[in-house]
Amino acid sequence: MAEEMRIVLRNYGKIDPLNIDEYIAAGGYKALEKAKGMNQIDLIEEVKKSNLRGRGGAGFNCGQKWFFANQANADQKYVVCNADEGEPGTYKDRLIMQGDPQSVLEGMAVCAYAIGANKGFIYCRGEYPYVVDILNQAIDQAKAKGVLGDFDIEVRMGAGAYVCGEETALIESIEGHRGEPRFKPPFPGVEGLWGKPTIINNVETFANIPVIVEKGADWYASIGAPSYPGTKVLTLTGDINNKTFFEVPTSTTIKEVVYELGGGVAGGKKFKAVQIGGTSGGFIPESLLDTTISFDAMSAIGATLGSGAVFVMDETRDMVDVVSKITKFFEHESCGKCAPCREGTARMNELVGKIKGGQGSSADITLLKKLGGVMSIACLCGLGQAAPAPVLTTLGHFAADYEDKLV
Amino acid sequence: MSYKGIIARYAEVPGGIIEAFHAVEKEFSFLPEEAIAEAARVFKVPAAEAYGVASFYSMFSTETRGKNIIRLCESAPCHIAGAAEVVAALEKELGIRMGESTNDGLFALEFTECVGQCQATPVITINSKPYLDVTPDIIPNILAEYK
Image (cartoon, rainbow over all chains, first blue to last red; front, side, top):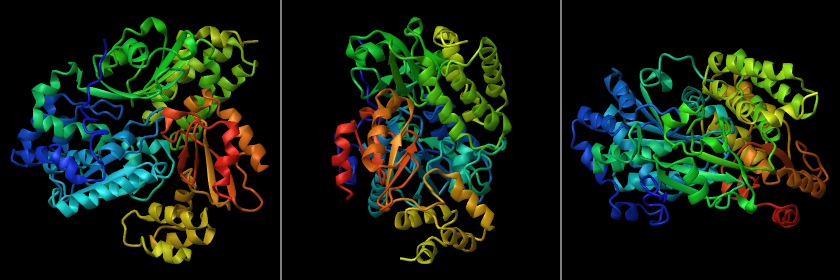
């Protein structure tokens, strides 16, 4: 039986998020104190050894990332929290920030000490002005208590651009520019915000940090899947009985998520597909539901864990109809900087629309597959590279939905 | 407050042009051309660049629009939960199409992508305040709050 395990949501619903005293009473800011008693390299080694990998979608080893910024020589370094949660079907960062904002601030402060930064930013999506208010209150309280020391945190608000979840686009946006991704390298750990070494981690990643520092790397590394340990907050949407959120160890299978925690498909209907990781995630058929949600297991079946969104579709859903919403989304959200994405997302939407409208032929299917393959390697950033996944995986697992509509 | 006064408040904020635009929109519901030109002067960037920022982000509008901005999520989870019926009901109730504003200047109707309230789809927001599990029959009541 799959069970919840709350690490990042440890205080969710248990403390008043707008009262720092309750966070401190629950053990808050002890980890920061402990971290500051450690040598910076030892601290980073501990985080590295926990094998905490980024919860924003890319899955990079968090401690390793910190190490690059620690080693960089600069008069100024920055810590940035990526709260530009924009993957459709995802609201886990909102839950964390609304339920326990101090845990995010504490995680950022530990990072700041580890890399030698005194300035941090939280880039919160423009759709969450009410979260921005909570964060600002939390920061004011932390400053008044003096728990952050000389580390200063400022909240910046996005303005409705999905691409700003990409770390270099996010940096551009904080700098006051259009949110267009930069060429990498240099990576932000070396040259980021205003050209200075910058660590950008997701809200969920930062919320894990205090617990790892407190309980140790070995404890954390023993939870869930060894190659991607810890927990993941999942948000369940679509045709599912329990449209809610869960935090589970990463060794949990998709089947357990859908049928045990999720309570199965709504309305007594049969399962057809589940898309995990947000709108750029692959579609998964019933035959692959025994896969665990861990990063590498998901990659192995051509899917992603991504943001942890779990979007369930029942037997009545037409995959071409659902995918047509997704291709429209990517055409709209492509920033236009690189041609493979700018043109590719538009053509992909056009081709899917043509098939949906009953005008497509088998040649269009061939073209879609070729276009998807090119985009996944030729696009500049993760947005364009991942955009074809819903099309390619539905063409693979649910080909009949397309073929039924061909002329 | 005038747009000049609003923008001036952010003059010392590095990269503050986006924050300034948010503040202008809060007051005017869109970004007047003069405000974009003023921001360009204050933040010392070419007017083209300031306009480029204004036009890049979907929450900013360079055209006039109604005071209360209604946004309807059209991402996949809201789509399969019946967003299309909500669109039809909103258009009927307000007498305008998506992307338009009412003649009295009270409402603007826009599509948006996911607003992160997917536990209760379909979702609309009015001036960023979320309304959950929206059905066509509750729309008149929601709109009444803003009339």
